[in-house]
Length: 338
Image 1 (tube, one colour):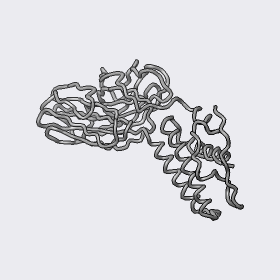
Image 2 (image 1 turned 90 degrees about the horizontal axis):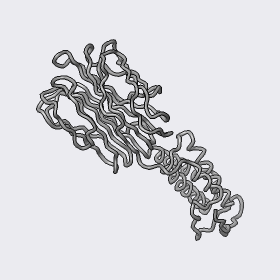
Image 3 (image 1 turned 180 degrees about the vertical axis):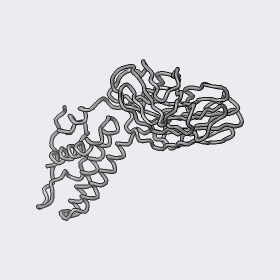
Image 4 (image 1 turned 30 degrees about the vertical axis):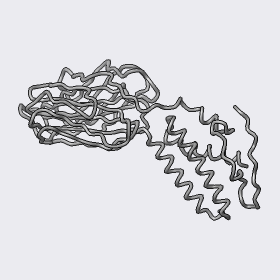
């Protein structure tokens, strides 16, 4: 580490705090004593979300209420690896049934959405879809279990995604709909954030089984029974905006659709909002005795915000650790100034 000579200090009358002279810029944050170890102690700088299809649509051979796949490919292990499932399915009994529970690699899964069609399609089938995920940091393969909410049998297929560098599993926007009677094309749009990803899963019963998906990469398509098609895909978002998935082909159809986008910078936005709260609080404290003290505190807040935002934007940081990170950076800057 390069040792820097301390900046010239201005010594105001008490109770004002000691601060660096106005005409000096703060040194490079990588050289700040006490802060550099903090900045390099985390994981290597995180890349944008990385999404890989590890296993294409795999059918379960038996219709039951709880289905289990063994030896499902999860891809290479990583501390921040999520396994997402796109799950199109059809039931042989109660209409409108949704997936209520599941496990991935022995980890309890979260059901993001699972709309089941409220009516029966021709032939006694009823269609549905689901988006399911779990944080599975170890192992390259494992079992997957899904359970239907009602006491009826179903036959799902799963497309498996390995997702790393995801900062939040709360969807930026989620669209979930059943009982859609639509002519082609069928389009759905969600808001998306840069460096996150978006996925869509569709089940359709209609007059075509050769529909195609555009707007996202089509990851799978299959016709499990006559007049029925499962189709879906995903995309890594390269910019913030709207992602639209469009399925074309055929002229009529009954649909179930789930579409969701997930973010990368959720913690960064949280940190920036939290720092604004701190700034508002400091500006209104009774001991802000002078405009110069106010400027000094504002500069401290801005520098703290820059450092924390840069760190959170490039390293995975749990939400619970952010207050300590903010306090640590702030205290280090205070020590430098005083």
